[in-house]
Amino acid sequence: MVPPLQDGRAMCYTLKKRSKGAPMKFPCLVLDHDDTVVNSTATVHFPCFAEYTAKFFPKAKRYTLEEYILKNFSPGVYEFFHGEVDMTEDDMKHEQAYWHEYVQHHVPQAYAGMRELLWDYVNAGGTICVVSHSLSPNILRDYRENGLPEPELVYGWEVPKERRKPQPCALFDIMEKLHFAPGEMLVLDDLKPGYDMARAANVPFAAALWSNDIPEIEAFMRGNCGLCFKTVAQFRDYLFSGKEA
Image (cartoon, rainbow, N blue to C red):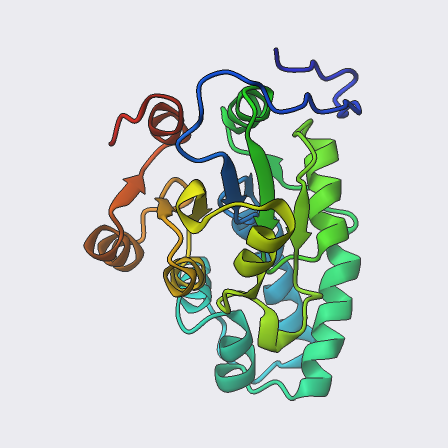
């Protein structure tokens, strides 16, 4: 049963213990956050980036939303800010502080069907973890505000760069702490860093393609990933019944 929302805000619930029913193919779901669980790049992160660069990098190129998403896809946000926007390490710390303040006042919405999917998954015995480039407190805030089940472990931007996604360190840590084998885990992500992370740890990967219709991203995912889903409903069908899109 999915807990209800009251007055538009999420209520707190205790997750059920793992059920003793039929074993799940993927008892551990490792989720990206932005544009996988919540619709955040178009509504939060890109507007913040555009506002910040207009104020502090007025001579820098003005990127479109599609260009911004593509740069996050490859080479990745750190390399994009450092290599193309030409931010120094101090600039990036300043941008992060600006972004952190911005997101305190902007809560992204979970995709339709995601809340029901995650509650059904944990109530069936599944374990949820998050590996993201957002900060962990913001991820947990988004989960609370959207009425989503609290993840078991969260690895966010605060993780040292040398251990941050796309490095596979978070997946190895989940294996060690929660005692899952690589084949028992499934990474769900919309961008290449998540794919690279999963591949490095030999963990199955599913591409979340419901956040945009950018041809370059979809072509890469469909050409390299065995599991690609255009809607949350398609992913749900696969997770619970093995039906591929």
